[in-house]
Amino acid sequence: MEIKGLDYNTQREKLVMSEYGREIQKMVDVAVALPTKSERTRCARTIIRQMENKNPMLRTTPNYEQTLWDHLYLMSHKQLDIDWPYDVGEAEKILTKPQPMKLPGDNKSYSRHYGRLLSNIFERLKTMPAGAARDELVRYTANQMKRDLAAWGHGTIDDEKVADDLAYYTDGAIKIDLSTFRFDRKQPAGGNDNRRNKRKRG
Image 1 (cartoon, one colour):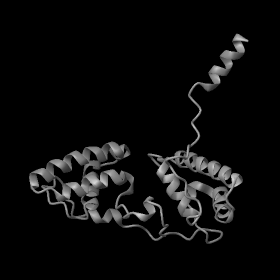
Image 2 (image 1 turned 90 degrees about the horizontal axis):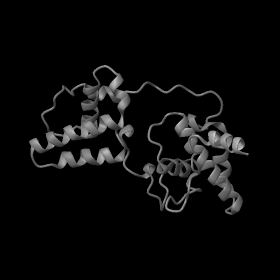
Image 3 (image 1 turned 180 degrees about the vertical axis):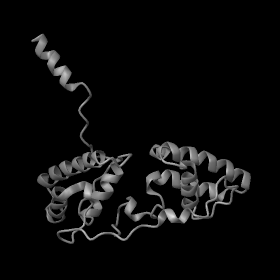
């Protein structure tokens, strides 16, 4: 869905491997365009190290280095001309997905990590008139979305992801400006200890 006036991820070119983010994809695009094979190969090795840092859980899987090079091959749209240290001929099998199962209940499909409460709020926000009440609900919703993403272990939880999803699930009705919108701060570690110390001093 295209939402005019926004530059969120839903309107950009779809990432082949979203777990690495758009910055890694830009690095891959630069590597593809380098003029010599030696430069491209050297750049590719640097990118692999960044990919490993971005997705450290891969280290716990067998043949994770092969997987990283397969991912790089796919992210380059098979256009990166380098001396590959692994055979990437089977890389496309990674993108093969099983047929999705039909979900029980209604046909309205929201991301599972947001749950039914937020899906109901998304629907309400679509038709809610502008004003202080809607602003407060948007603030609550955005912060709850960020907490839900963190709880479900979605890796790097950036503000743009929340703004992107909020605009998408409200059909563009809610477009938060990240230059002015402020998310709630997390409670600092040791907050309970501080309160206990105050009671002791009292």
